[in-house]
Length: 242
Image (cartoon, rainbow, N blue to C red; front, side):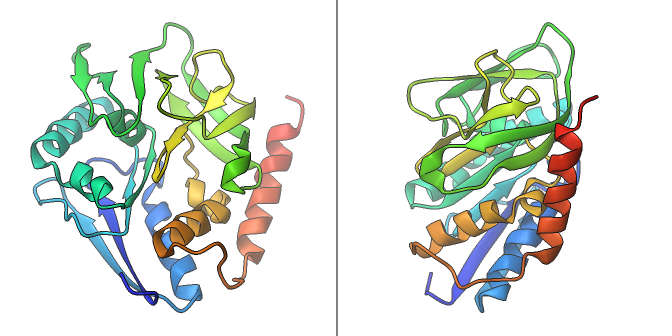
């Protein structure tokens, strides 16, 4: 990758693209172009090989059966783990987040192996489904503002010693294991339960991925008027007493 180009890979849009998660690819592409970067966006369907030379890989959420199919094909393909070995950035949401872990419960009620790119494992929650808006304070090392998003999942994700929580929830359930954490990250691999899409609600997350891909500490300013209006509306609505 040169300092003026970015290769963006959207993984399995035919299986993993619920709740508008495709919007994450659109926002990252837009934020990069606003900084004068040439962006090559590659949408990789589940019957295609995952390229290993991308800079940023995005994975969305999906229903239980598509999640199992995606996990099976990503294990067989091995392109995504190889891309991570090459230093690529990966950002995953909901079902995609669970796939990056060691295992999750599939649509058959069985333990399904993940890719092991994050030291997490997911079980199925016994209580009510986690549905609603979330506010979370991100890990300070990431330099992000308050995160806002929408969660809709039955899964409970447990974090191992090899990852850090992406954020601590102040509203909502997040990972759902009772410790108040949301998502997980290690080096250049990130996972979250936040939809919305999360990049539209939190453009700083898209900017963080671009900075990591370019290996820079800052980006030229870009207009955030629309994003900030959305953020303010959703944060205020979430903080309002029920």
